[in-house]
Image (cartoon, rainbow, N blue to C red; front, top):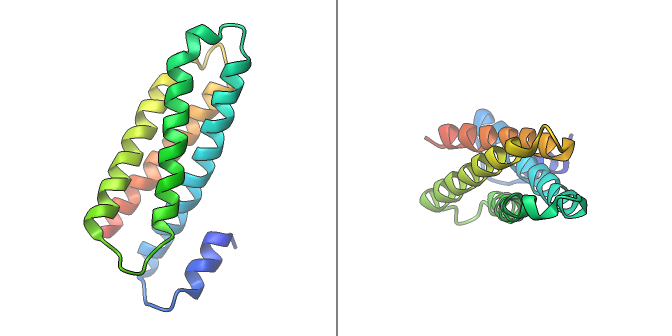
Length: 135
């Protein structure tokens, strides 16, 4: 059991099991994506062609920050605001989609970009799944 799952199990208010599973997955994917995007940006900075990767680096760092914030917001349930949660999930999904597209442009030359694009896809999917579960 992951830490996110352990913490949600201790939450005193009821939550449907499908929503709980979607929430756990989204928190975990946001955390993972933030780490992978940060590492991808760092790897890009070490490439000989760093000048060609400036947009990728910026997109990675923006996505990492948005994913980190989304995971943190999703970890708080008291005083929950559905509209804010949906908005941040939409922003996270959009950021992941943009980062994935940018990393895919460089994936053939840089394996770290391929890994990052996949992490972004998983996170975007998890955000979309949670949005659907909130409906």
